Image (cartoon, rainbow, N blue to C red; front, side):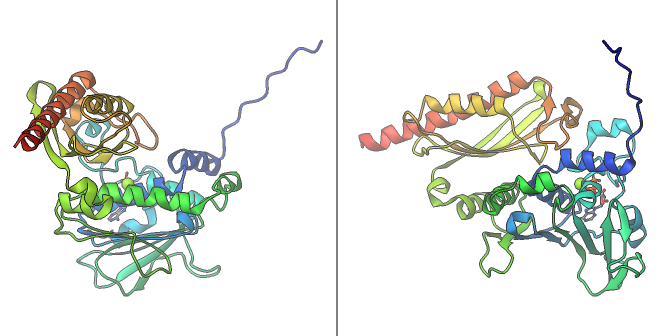
Amino acid sequence: NETPVPRRIKALDQDVVNKIAAGEIIVAPVHALKELIENAVDAGSTSIEVLVKDGGLKLLQITDNGSGIDKEDLPILCERFTTSKLQKFEDLQTIATYGFRGEALASISHIAHLTVTTKTRESNCAWRAYYDGGKLVPAKPGQSPDPKPVAGRQGTQVTVEDLFYNVPTRRRAFRSPSDEYNKIIDMVGRYAVHCSNVAFSCKKHGESSTSIAVQASTSCHDRIRQIYGGGIASELTELSTSDDRWAFKAKGLATNANYSTKKTTILLFINHRCVESSNIRKAIEQTYSAFLPKGGHPFVYLSLEIDPRRVDVNVHPTKREVNFLNEDEIIQAICEHIRAKLAAVDASRTFVTQT
Ligand code: ADP
Ligand code: MG
């Protein structure tokens, strides 16, 4: 019987740490896409174009017309924990932007080939920079890694190529590029519904037709019509409720009792971030079950604004979930509002059939 000998503990290489962290934040192409859309929105863009090849595994390109990035910031742009959005830990309490940890671009640069082309209003040309492992790298071996002046319009174009090229097990896990593309369209669609005054387009590389195209001036209702179809759009009722006690406001559009489909679709935004909440989903489904035929489900777009001091956005590496205070009370208030709306439409429908 041998006595076990402890193995020595050693610090991991920074490069290994960064690659592990990147794999937690960017699990699939759609996670990179979400971060890049959020960056574009944070930069005040009114137009966001998405181009995709092989479900985002070969190419993911996001072009915006926002503020652009100062040339002086390009050397540290993709370092981990560099951000223009957060200074003190306390700022997390009032954060209004999507990003806050300066991890997205860093992560992407560790697991893909990343190119950023950007132009601010003040600059008289655009600058193009290539990144690998958080740092500027030359476009070709032997060249200088410094950003190169190029022609370009105001805004930023982020090009992500060969995602997970250096994480072969992850790369192999993606069997179907079209599944990944569908997730990307789904995410672009969600932000396109939510971000009024922003034009969105999404298409596959090499195809002339777009999967999604909405103009900046298109109303929320028409965005839903274009992306989710006329069947949903013609049966929408407006949601709008708030309660000062729980410091929340909720707005949105949801199908009425005339509409039902096989699967629930919920577009949920909490403080303008697209998130998932199984509690909200369950409560909404239960609310609708009293109005829809058995097996019927709704479409609900819900934008929830909660006092940021009551929301913890930092609970999940992908920021997919958030925690907030008085969750039960807020969910109950929203569902009561939905119930009242559904009952009103139900009553008017009965009235119509009677006359
Ligand atoms: P975060 O969004 O958490 O700050 P990111 O790694 O996503 O971290 O981005 C780092 C910084 O790069 C941002 O704080 C922002 O200043 C700048 N940036 C990233 N994308 C864009 C963009 N599309 N337009 C303008 N600035 C951008
Ligand atoms: Mg970001």
